[in-house]
Image 1 (spheres, one colour):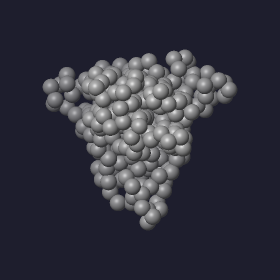
Image 2 (cartoon, helix red, strand yellow; image 1 turned 90 degrees about the horizontal axis):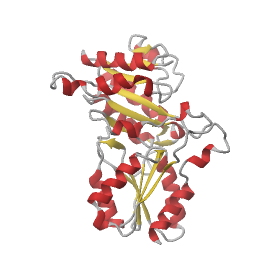
Image 3 (spheres, rainbow, N blue to C red; image 1 turned 135 degrees about the vertical axis):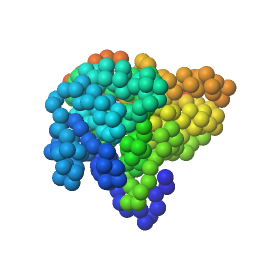
Length: 328
């Protein structure tokens, strides 16, 4: 989306999510929110919703992800449209409910039931949260048939994608990168949605394609700015949703530039970046003029140490260097 001089309504990603949920709750009384500390709006995006919709539609749950993520499956199966909020990305303790029930129920019941659930997954990292609170589990959910996976990088996309996710009839893992929740971007007041499975080019370029997601997109844009000063034109492509994935847009960009760098803040092995690299290697091989470069978090448990943790993640400098490597 191109911003014009008259567009001045910049809001944070957190505010955009709040607006999306509020608007959808007003439109459809079946939509409700459940999760940890949400009536008080402790984690921001649900702030003020209990005051408008009451405690029946904004339901605090015990600190048991397995309980409330599983309860959402039952609620959705009987016609409700739950939005499930967890304070952190603690998906592991609820994996049976998520993988064996939410993802499979429509298939196992022969299409006789829909599972319209939005699981909001907060991704905390690069803030000395240590190993348990720094999980970024979305690549695993890309592997599970039945789940859709959404990952916005700015306020505009976050609001439009959240509204679309709430209207989906399948479970959606909605990833929220906590490093960018306070970042501001233009969001129109009028109604809009962003379709799942449609990528967006955040910066046009001709020499190399950088595919990044979530909080890696702003870093990729910084890298592209640095490279531009060196006469290198890098295109930055944001998939916005990982399932469905707009592989046509990725392949088209690589066909134009001839080079690919994938950037992911999940662990490098079996990451979203790995899947995107594999797709291009198989379906866009003849467009490539250099080996693909793949960046991600190093395969270690995330340290608490503020001195050590930043060394685990991609940075604008490492992204820029990966692009230079493809041009050597």
